Length: 169
Length: 221
Image 1 (cartoon, each protein chain N blue to C red):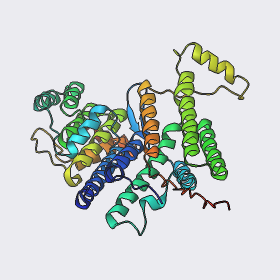
Image 2 (spheres, rainbow over the protein chains, first blue to last red):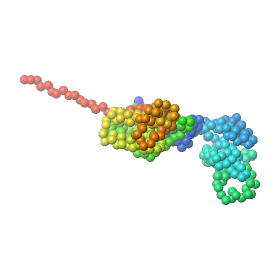
Image 3 (cartoon, chains in turn brown, orange):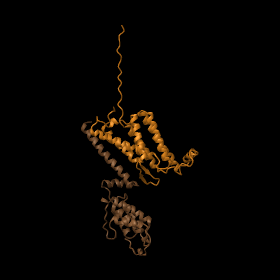
Image 4 (cartoon, helix red, strand yellow):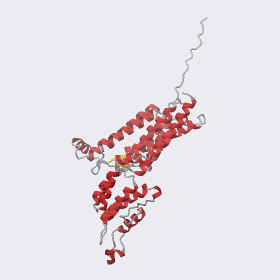
């Protein structure tokens, strides 16, 4: 083997090893829990991941009709690898709206919402996510996250009877 | 001195093998199908250092075959990648073969620690170390992915009953098995196999040439 060819092989090997090691580290950091999530993560890392628009629109329709479990099922189909920030935002919002009550908040749903909004923030470029949807009262992932966190905190002001007049966002 | 490795083997095949082991070693598949990736616990880093020491002492890992002043910068970079990948693979192989929690985890780690220590003291040669590692990793695989998995599987039938009878009296209480998906066993098997193949492909010491010189024939007077 010529010296130049050998050098090329070694350079190619170094590039390959660096890329492969980076991929393994990213998998360990993202912790995909299904093969679809793993494959989606790979596709997203090379910019080839796309959300299914039909299922996304169906999810939006269910979401706006207050059919939250159905909406989440459609959103999960649209974004099976949980790589799309906007879809994860809507999933988190659906947990918020389903868990919201005038006299109590459903902690289990709020916690799941918090997980989803954290995923959305993690996937958004620079961690900043703005969703321009006129039907929503909260347009940023930060607002939604803060609202979900507030719902999980027990404090004296929870006993304030005026709280029943609060509106769902 | 070592036999020179083909560039493709050193730069591509060995890193690919060892990085695959490093990646797959931490994979856990739950019986329900959920996956998770376990990073190497600190003890496995210690075991990996010890294992690399044992390999260097036995001539299985020859540092001068991968790194040194006699090599170019590019060759040294390739060699460093192989050593780092081997270290990561070794750490994750121990993660793969060790239960994730409980007393058994401690027992497995102590078993590996004392065995490596003993091997270090015994100073085996390359071939014997390869055989020894095959037996050690093979037994750890069988215990974790066959015996312990059978103990946790209520449908394992006579295998489970046999193991329970064998272990009766050996411990103060029942040994808890570990619920493992069958896929995890296959992945672990492939992981161990790839690691051993990688070890076989590491640079070998150069064959010593022995010159047989016939003594001068002295003619009898």
